[in-house]
Amino acid sequence: MLIMIILFKKLSTNILSNSLFKRCNIAIIILSGFFLLNSITLFAGELHQHIEVTIVDQRAQASFCRPEKGCSLVRPETLGLPAGQMPVDKLTGTPIYVSEFSIFPDRTAIDSPGFEGLEGDMIAGDRVRYLASGHLSYWNTEKRQWSLAPEGIQVRLAGGLDLEPNQDCGQVFCIPNTVEGFTLFNRDGIDSASSLIVGEVRPDGSLHTHLDWIVESNQGTPSAPVGAYMVELQLITDSFPIPSEPLWIMFNNGLVLEDFQQAVAGRVLQSNTDTALADQLFSWAESNHPSLFPHEAASIITLGFYARCYQNGVCVGVKDNHIFAVGGEFGVNVVTLGEFDVLTAQAGL
Image (cartoon, rainbow, N blue to C red; front, side, top):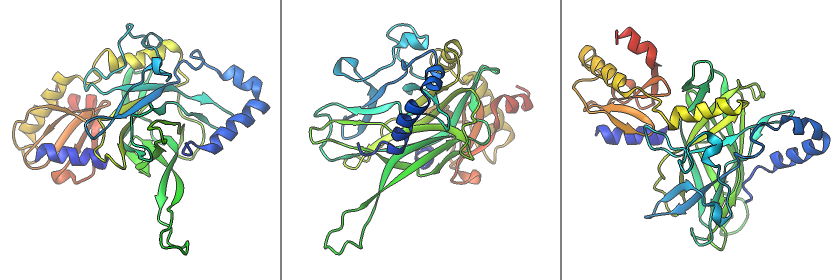
């Protein structure tokens, strides 16, 4: 969220994987083998993949990995896309990495996508971190539309680590304690830790690590509605703190193949935002609320939003069928003004 605010203002002016989850998987396989066999969905592991991490121009870069180098990549055909067309958001150009939740007796979770760096791609000992941002997006099969996730539903990213200074070791130099944490993505933004360590680069300059993704209610129960969910991350390292371009991770939660392909198509093969209608709404707001939107402004695409920014510090944007604003009278935190189709109807557009 903080990254989004900073950029909006500028425009206007493998010890790290969750071992508990791994042990839980082993126990479930032993005790509940029949249940797990019957819980395997149509994909049967086809959505397992890695996000390739490299350093380019003094900055972390995430990209679709190269299977010829030994990593896992989902085939476009599996997603209903033409051969060779990778899942990239049509409006913003943001890459989308896909995965699929598995159903276990006590949780709905997956440890994919993982993060992969090839030998020599990074500096040995450097720590790779994620920056969580945005809102939890949701594909509703009834409306055939991407929107915000239902109230009370979240995706938990677990297994990342942070460092706590240790000043009680009795030595001149104390090794920091490592503390496991988690990040919560929901319709209102990000809760708990917004940035944690993904992994530490190996001595040969490579990286391979997996964190755990869990979809649940805000009470921690595995009761999230069937649908597709999507979160947003950026990557940094201790040595290269400039954030990467945003990346999105899309999860299938119980949709049959055809429905999940429609969710993918709703981002990749068509724009999720009617930009012409958005421009009409922005212009209507400039005419009817000049104290908030004091002049005509050009529309831009930033951080997944179709947006306009004004000299008074206000930025307003459309994403996931909702209108968001930040700056000026709206304050330093991004606020949701309402549903896009509802507000356009109220404006008579």
